[in-house]
Amino acid sequence: MVKEILTSVAIILTFIAFAPYIRGILWGEIRPHLFSWIIWATTTLIAFVATLKGGGGIGAWPIGLSGLLVVFITVLAWRRQSDHSITRLDWVFLIAAFASLPVWFITNDPLWAVIILTIVDLLGFGPTLRKAYHQPYEEGVSLFAIYAFRNLLVIGAMEVYSVTTLLFPVAIAIACLAVIVLLLWRRRVQPPTTTG
Image 1: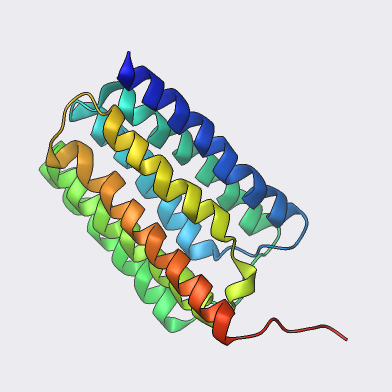
Image 2: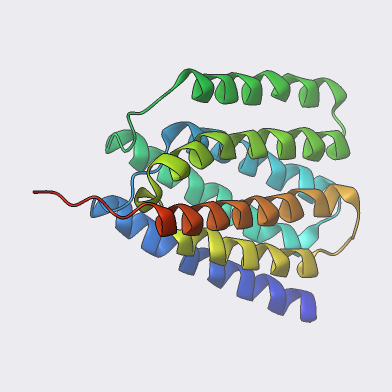
């Protein structure tokens, strides 16, 4: 019963986290980095399947829901041409992320899938961290804060505790905290620009 409650709360928090972020994109307040979201859409959906195969059970469902919402944000970012500042470093992150995916297909092991997908997903934070440093007002803190907390609930809801089921949500929670710290620090030292 506890696992079901944790999963339900994690699912609700997933919607709560993404709703203002999606609204911010639609209103032009948030401009997500397309490359990060392409990487996250791919890895989150595959991590969902791997976590299920690894015995995560009901605790994996919030990851699957996140995957669907991340795909939606990726489409919004593409359609709205959210962030045009694609650098060579962003290309390095994207290429490195997708170059590591074939290793999982070769191994066909949920543990290796989660290890590789976690690394790939963390590479997806690269463009967003770079953008957060230079444009800290174009990212939403609330998404990353709620998402970090939500992942703690996902961890509690896992039916089996192993590296396969825990690595992805733990690593993503830590990465979200890193984005929050960077955004808050940069907003403190860089005043918002005003348009004339």
